[in-house]
Length: 335
Image (cartoon, rainbow, N blue to C red; front, side, top):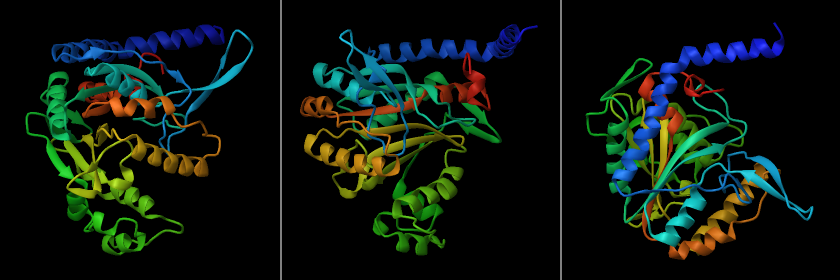
């Protein structure tokens, strides 16, 4: 048997072994479309290879090149999210939209990460963060069994999802006043009773405590929305008008999986540009090769973006929850 034929045989065996999981995946794709079409959403498609892939500080992008008929070339990147493009569509149409998009994030691989995966994103004009959480609850109940199993956890989706602010989570599980220590790594370390590592910033310590003390204990009996993130982690979210130290952002956790990230969207182009400039400086400081221009087209569209909220949900992880698959590779057709 040649190496090629052996590889084909292995592919066939692997797909046959996982076929029930893959068939469930296909059924869930249909259910996604049915859910959003039933609520008046418009399905859209946006480019994957783009001149500006996003402004996230810690994500690494795949780079490619566009060759034009005249022989000139321009850099392109495989996007890490369709967010900028989808918001431009909302700004142009005022419509609620959704997309099942392939996205790419270089350097990420584990049982729950793949460098290429499917992201479900939707944007709803007129929705605030609370109503988006309501809709997300409805969506999960429509797509998942009433009880899902993840490792030793049994998660009951018939219960109201927990809504926990980041400030309350740190008070409960870390013993620290998160927002009160913002920017002061020494104060946060003292309240959390941990030693500050060499060169560790407040943001570094925030993420260390989030990963070590908060994420492991939430979303275990029922899904948890972790809301009102520190303003330093606002990204593309509005600040909380009642407390400017926090951003109108949530992440959703189910059985140890971070499943979704959502914002009540920022529509101020001046503030958004300032954030982009800051994030770009930090990103290039960490990874000098991750350099591209600010997305001027997106910023120009922001004043026309209606008040809305949007969410990015890892579809592959949703399939993992539905099937009980322990690894993301189990529910990918070819991995």
